[in-house]
Length: 98
Image 1 (cartoon, helix red, strand yellow):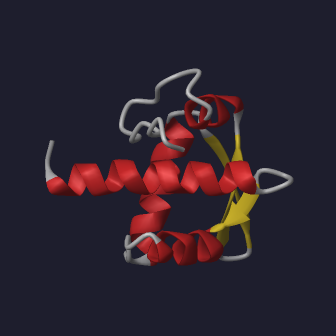
Image 2 (image 1 turned 90 degrees about the vertical axis):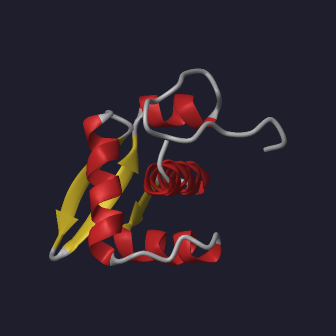
């Protein structure tokens, strides 16, 4: 696995975890960029959008547009991955310490 693939997988897991923490399971790309930055994954808006689209392809999130901003909502497959009930290809697995 390449470095870029590993960072993308880690970033997708961070996104899913953040969505799982929200009361309604939703957040927008600007907030998610700040969360990723906190974890040392400092990437462009387009990179974050690419990861969100990949998660949508995996049926882990549902995306909607609010003006020019993407809003992600956690779906069952995404929650199952975060809670270790299922595995999503291309998303880092949560560690046992979490």
